[in-house]
Length: 154
Ligand SMILES: Cc1cc2nc3c(=O)[nH]c(=O)nc-3n(C[C@H](O)[C@H](O)[C@H](O)COP(=O)(O)O)c2cc1C
Image (cartoon, rainbow, N blue to C red; front, side):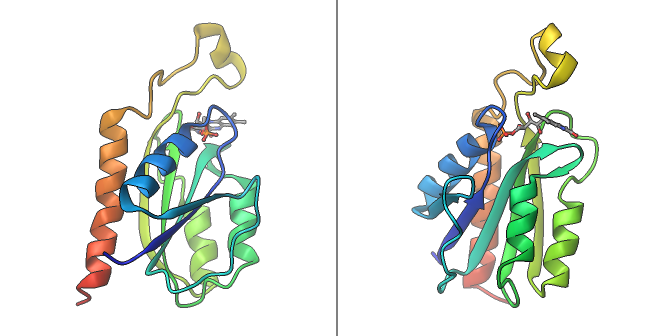
């Protein structure tokens, strides 16, 4: 199976970390928390997966900054995110930045994540228990599919 590198941030409840740790460890891939470490130099990875929670309708500022300051040209890149309420494709801004950087953007996969931001805390938050087992498996299947495509191009 071709290799993947995961770059992520997760600051609200660790929802995205849970998702990334499950998918990356299932694939034996490296996952780097951009809030703790700089992204490593890219090597021969077949796929780079960027992941974060959704904050004010888009992905985290450190993740967007990472896209703008690294060499994504010609790289196959996909996005994973967790959000309180799935109302639209929250990866749109990140996808635009990736395309401007010359990346080969392969799409996004989002799932719900426990959200107790602002007034939501008064009702105990929403999407409790998410991401759940089914969310983890569905994110794994999204990334595995992209890796399979990488090993059988065309
Ligand atoms: C400051 C803030 C803003 C948020 N804005 C949105 C939003 O616009 N749309 C949404 O669906 N969820 C929103 N959420 C909920 C998070 O996207 C959700 O809880 C996510 O799973 C957090 O991921 P994390 O625990 O990895 O940081 C917001 C949460 C915070 C803390």
